Image (cartoon, rainbow, N blue to C red; front, side):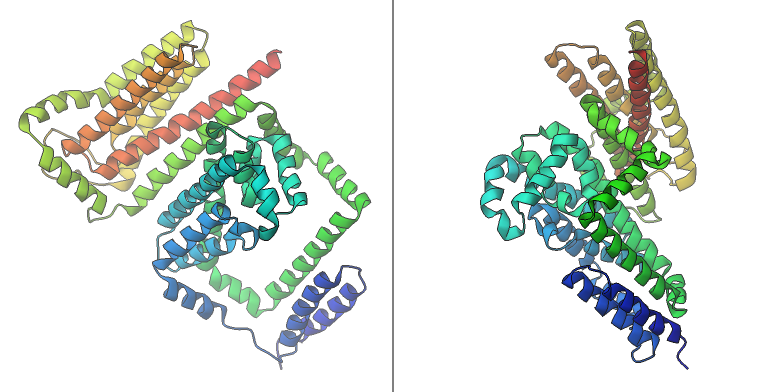
Length: 493
């Protein structure tokens, strides 16, 4: 006896109920096919394919080519408006599944998807600036960009601006053409880019990890499917979703009730409040998005490199040492051994404290406290990470070193120069002075980082990891300080 006769009977019953609803021919046809498939399975007429075998075949056939395929589709999603006809999430999910099988690295996949998604958005943004809205009006119908859709996305921009780029990443229609509209509407790149980097990172990471963890837990999913629970539950969810979407679209009274309930929901108010506040305070929203995007990129680089570190030397580390060894001269090495101390903790801590005192005297105590806290947290995080990775120093060093390698403490602490320069520039100096301060600070951090590789005190990956870790910490602490400062100003009015 087939174990699922009840599923077949329920499938027929659901079809009879659905048939009575005025849901439209297309919706009814889709529902009928789904219910018929469930009924045939339930009565034992057909057997479902082996899900594990199908996904294993996909992973085996794609292999390393998954990087190219998924990256290309992530780029084309917005770079060529492919997202209007084929959602990019599907390809990214498949990439995550392949990573879950062990065929490719999930960290590398997330990085490729992230970079390609941003590249696609920038391409669309540039096209928007060059071609303008008139291009979409003339050629949009070929890509299913109707005037109604265009006005719908433009309405998002009119109400929320930069937040649309962030939240729109998770809305199919908005995601596909929002970068083009941003370019056509002359949104500044400095406003567009932070929101886009953050949104693309969250979007890409989410769907990569969904596919990855789906594969990791596939045996549990299959056990539910074997009992018939997943199939029936999935059908019910799909049916309810179709019913809700159709009624919400057609029934004005029902839509008003849903919106009223959302307005009364404490959870919705907690989510909506910060988003609305960020959208209505343009400068605050932009600064917060910039800091969070820096934190996201820094965190990804730090943890991604930590996951790749193993007993063998990374290719990028060996290539960097090949170049450094070719350029090494004992006399120059003596000079650089002195310069590299600019990245030591005592020196950078003194710079941070001096900047914090200056900030306090200029009524910017919160910013001063933020860089002091961030520098202290960086010190703690560096030593915790060293103990966790337990990576030995490279051989053939040209300077005295102690302790473990990953991440580079000198590189991490040197980010303090950039943070201090930003605090100083916020005091309202002339733009040339601000640019000079930040440029000098970046040059100092880069010099310290390069010196560690030149002296073979650290691998290049150690240096990148240190820079990334400190960037993430400073950005997160800065974001918290920004929120606290803005709330204080708002309450003080």
